[in-house]
Length: 140
Image (cartoon, rainbow, N blue to C red):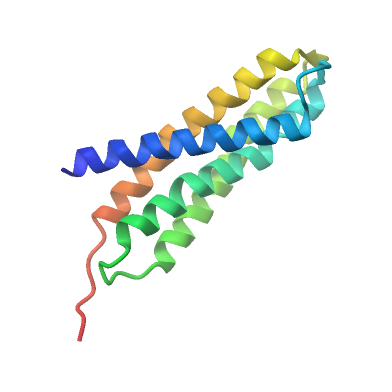
């Protein structure tokens, strides 16, 4: 059962984060012109933060609802994971793509989708597992 919950929440997180990524990509870059590598690279910083935040806080809170456990650890853990994702994943992508003059819009969209899916697949199972294994408070 726990494995099914973990898989379900991870797949839902991937789908939602990919959909949000596509929407923001079209809003920010569109598909017509090549994207400057520096602009493309720097866009991974907020993407990493919000993909990790949405991929951890929502599933974590959903798992904990009704269990009587505190929500502060879920929120704090999610913020910590989001900040770490900015530094590691977002920073790495920024450094990589800032070295490239331009990125064609089509491949750039594919890269953004893959980034969102992979990051979600990394952070969501961890957050869900932590939420499922948290001790339950005794209710009066």
